[in-house]
Length: 400
Ligand SMILES: Cc1cc2nc3c(=O)[nH]c(=O)nc-3n(C[C@H](O)[C@H](O)[C@H](O)COP(=O)(O)O)c2cc1C
Image (cartoon, rainbow, N blue to C red; front, side):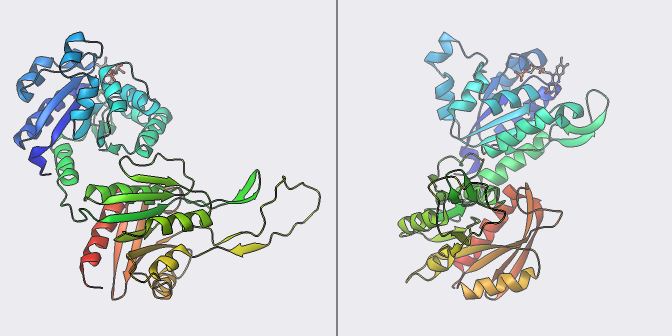
């Protein structure tokens, strides 16, 4: 869909930056989009709804419990109507409410009721922004698939300098254009992505696992969806919400993941193995908890099936992309894995270094294919995922 056809629901909350949302409304209208406005009660203390009404050309929605509105555009209607939901400025209060699922006003209720992509552009005093509660709420929102348009460094309305100033309306508008008007390069293609860590049970209470958070794989799901792919996500254990609108299958062990991959791979065009699959599992899962009697115990481990290699060895395999996490000789090990497993592409990253890797929000990748390589520099995993998907699409359409 071209950007001009987008139906944008813009929610304005009660901060000084509410006046900047007027300029944002104007910029979005200039792009030809249909913009409807929600204002919180506090927002109306900063800017008059009439100004937004004049700029958007529509009545402004302020009340949840409004008998008139429920006949026309009630909360469910608004939630269904929107192609994208943008909260700008987003106060600390509204971030907290959305993170914890409160639904006591129109904005927070629409947030819970919508399945469209959500963007937040926070704006607040830098101490409020850096408060652990705000940062924790933001993490929850991002893990739930909400897109952050990060605040900027600068002088604030309170006279202090720090992070917390809302991104400029021009920046917000550009971000929406670049995300929503992305060419649908993977339209109608079926993409299967594995993510997260597998768990290999030892006894009813213990298991072997690894430190993969699943964030990179989940970000790849969102990035592939943004360019039109139908995505199946086969996920090991993570603490993050699966992205909306993908076919989500939860598994626990490497053997389960292997079985589910082979049930879903039939019409798959691109397979991305981002899961951290355990190489070995205990030979035997004990029925009863292992007791702390002996000073030493021996675990015998059995090699797990190699999902990536098995997918790439199919008679007509999908375009197969693997991941490698290395502590040393990254290029050598990654290239060796690419050739040995007959992959089309491998994305390698360092582990055990300060920056990036497991359990982090940023990462960098060295990507290798048969006759080429590209380094994707350190950035947020959501951005890195977009770059990797673009590279995968480029190689997918190059004869291989
Ligand atoms: C003058 C003034 C400016 C404010 N600016 C902000 C702000 O920039 N960011 C913020 O998170 N809260 C700000 N607040 C606090 C919010 O208005 C308050 O938390 C309110 O409950 C937010 O409600 P809402 O999230 O429903 O809009 C400000 C309060 C006042 C009185």
